[in-house]
Length: 247
Image (cartoon, rainbow, N blue to C red; front, side, top):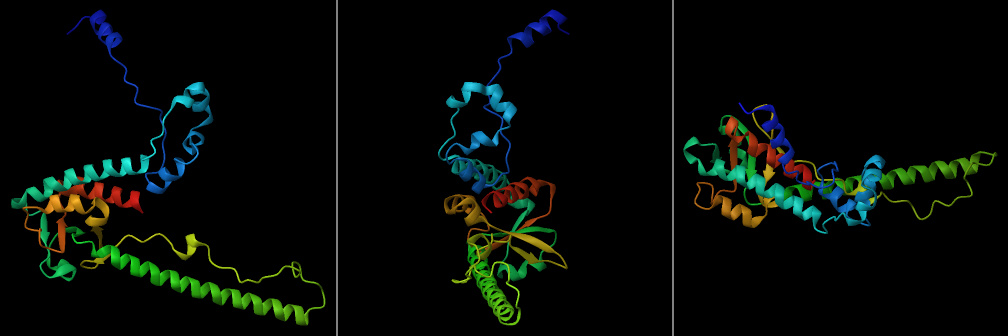
């Protein structure tokens, strides 16, 4: 065991590496894009931290491609974990679905379904478009009901109605954020429960998927199942993080 003074000398000589300004935020791509405009990231810091940094904030750099940079980091981490799972074919942690997604229930211990050709994205788009059209129709019906109530009050009530001088034409429309809600995470039924469906092409990109499947049993499959195992927990976690980041 080293003497106390030697241990102290090691601590004193230890190099301190500047890891950047601490800033915590939700791991969403849209948030990073928002913070990158007009130095909004600066005001996301606490006031106490800004006071401590002082003039050094003028030298702090926020990458213009920060959102894509973080996306690349998440993709590389997910690919690394998935590559290990796909390469260990003897463990049968990934099994291709010969009859498509409908054959998922024939497999045991399914943790999630991997969409290898990107068809999940199209299904999500069609479902979101149908939902937005339905909400738009409900909004039009609501506006029409309000107009009828206004006309009836004007014709039958003697007292002036608050705000009656305001015009309601043209009819209000739903805000884009409501009319086009974020896509819901895809799932599929599995033995009285639901398991997630991950669109690998949408999450990882086409190039990563091609390299990932090269030489594996799933190279020509449209779907594959990822089995529930300790060896696949890390891959599932990174896929979920990536899906939340891009949502």
